[in-house]
Length: 120
Image (tube, rainbow, N blue to C red):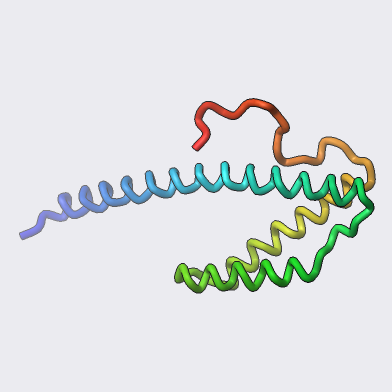
């Protein structure tokens, strides 16, 4: 007969393993977002410097289709993937508009020549 305490301890052990994986994935996501926004902030500056429009509806539609396809391939929600993209695009558009208006201090990414020692 299984002891209820053994089952609870087993569940706690499994939870700890899953939570450690989640923590590692979250750390990787933060570093990946840093790199992604480093790129989009550069794009914002280029568009502002050359008086290009912040929106590129063709690219946005292509990206939405691409991410939806990737999500389907991965067995993930295409709607969630597209909502993530929309969130990013909305932020990038606000950033571009702020840069074009001459605002400073609007970057999410610290511009430095060194990388954090714990970089993944």
